[in-house]
Length: 112
Image 1 (cartoon, rainbow, N blue to C red):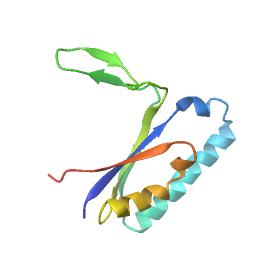
Image 2: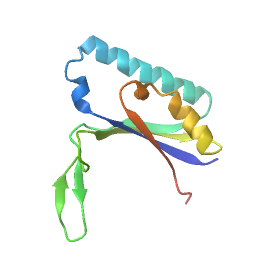
Image 3: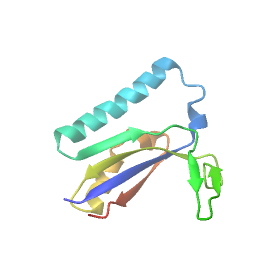
């Protein structure tokens, strides 16, 4: 079955005023969602990325700090899921709690 990356884009500034209790509630929603995917055999893995935007390396050795597009959004994390096709992967993404504060890019993983 094909694998898809759900790339979670967000503006980290939106969490600046979130209390620790609110952050725990947000994390709990993601944990509940991913647990449901695990029970259905649809999740391969996932990780939260640091908000700093990372580094961008180009040919010739140039290294710049991210984010890499105009704006304040960063790639905040990702999940790898399995689905029959893009429609199935998009259906999984539509259930993700991330859509309440960001957007999700869905990309199929090239089989090796």
